[in-house]
Image 1 (cartoon, rainbow, N blue to C red):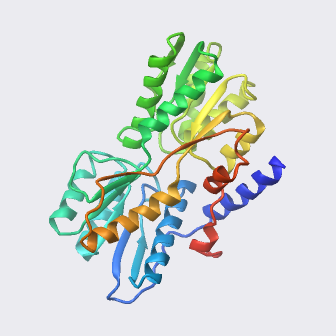
Image 2: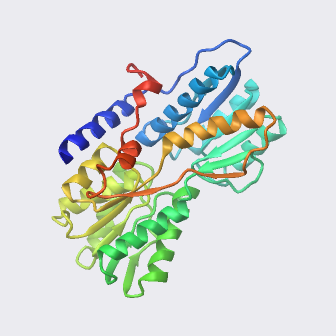
Image 3: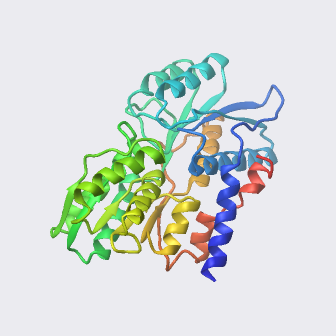
Length: 336
């Protein structure tokens, strides 16, 4: 039964990875909204895209035409490209932006420039060191990291040695997850030692795999558990453990976010838990909140889209399947 469920999930996730990065068709008098992700290749961002299109479809049934432009850098470490995208759409004069900032400091100036140009911005996924935005729609990443730390502590029965491989400098979302994890271990499990928490994986799976190998080369004989703050780090660390013969629960792995590979690893028992966000909801509420703001409605400054811990035991439950297997083709189309 579990294999059938995971097969359905894989099919949906494989579909996501084939989606294109542009979707818009509307008349010139439509509201023109650009959605700017951190990158356009990871499956997480494709789900945010689907949520944005879901919002567009609903708004149009309510009588509000919306043009959604989906544009972001290919790589999640290309700050200059994301800044250029924001600046280009300020010049174009769009009605509003939904932005996942690649860097919580580097994107401050462009966002404030948009605000000065009377172009409201809704921030999604990752925070910004500024309050010049209409709303911040995201997971409470600190809570998600703390959830990961508490679960890993339970798996280790409160004792042992753990590693945390960070994601990237300037990524506010993963920084908050990392802080939540460390606070959970320190506050609840005094007999668990954090062997390393200051190394960074980088933006790609290839970089993360090399960083994982380096950490395991140094601490592999001592480590009992690992926390990984995003999808690429989770997949890469799990592969490195598998290559060393330390997977299948020999070293407990708790990761963040899902992909085809991470769900395979969860089903195989190489990963014990995944903290899962709701990116479709994030993209959906990002657009809906921006449109409400443009219509003059007072919107909440902070909107939490929630997290859940996914394990082998609960991955077949309806509420978890809804997170893992959303009807993306309905929103993005079979050819995207």
